[in-house]
Image 1 (tube, rainbow, N blue to C red):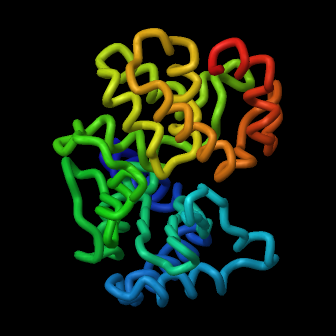
Image 2 (image 1 turned 180 degrees about the vertical axis):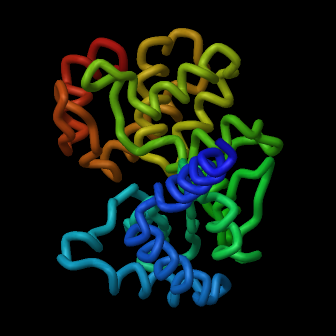
Length: 268
């Protein structure tokens, strides 16, 4: 009986040890070891690394946000994990980026992966954190903003950035879109001045969502003429935006999303 227990214990431990795919962990270790050699203070070096992993040129196409801003997101898949990066450009110059690592969902592997990452990334409540370079630049409204709001609430700041999702619309595939969901969370607490501030977001989806809300509640706003002029500029600077049609991701023109009869009803 004693021998049986010893054998059973050994088999259980062996099964637990070899339950994870060694090929996947090998790929992940190689990926992590390469990434942590990058100089985080050198955005061009990080950008070039992610560009080198892309097979097709279309994989490096930048998303146009308008007003001189562009964004490029890339992800490198491993076995259990992936590491992604988002790069922000202003007038075609790389000004900011974020590098987002992952730990495996498998709890038994996490200690090993933390050791591989070393102190390259920070942790908060055992969760590995993204590294952000010069993130302050995307936490500002467009330079055209001349309003008086200075101490912008954190939720509003985050909504104005691409972090809240750059796809405009309400829902797709039966799910509320990320950007709209974020807007619904702050909508009831917004002042009129804060709503106008959102029209100066770097994020085009946030700009258009704020404009849509304004058009439907225009009677409660002062300075309508000034706001209306800015809306014309936004439409000209944001001729196209990502959205959803049913269950499909599409790129639509702003003119189609805000047709003339809609503008005439709520706007002029």
